[in-house]
Image (cartoon, rainbow, N blue to C red; front, top):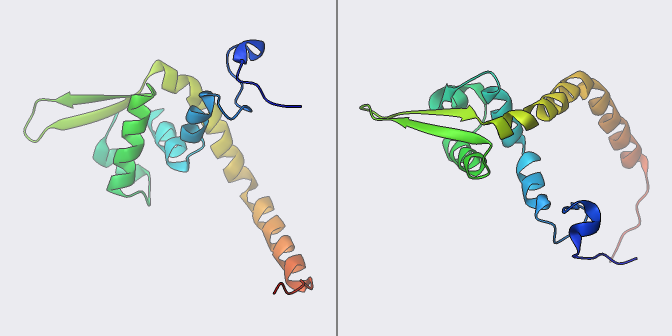
Length: 137
């Protein structure tokens, strides 16, 4: 069974097809920094520095890239106030808020199930360490 570029049969989009543009937004949404930034913004408007402090471990460069992508995709708005120094605030748009609930659910699931995942990893690693693997030359 082959794939087709004719997306009419799938309501206009089918992310399982390589050529489907919806894959681009899946790439954005599946990014951990996107997920965390959108979660932080679901509480309201934040300045860049506030976001950076909230997203422990993110670099200034990565936060800038993430916010630009989210703004370009219509998930975040950027408001610049003409002060010295300039004040810049970020907020989720209606489109951004519509996906935040999904992201929140994934984050909560991750937090609630981390122990089970870590146990599964340990069990896998223990099994893998005991397996005799053929040497490939």
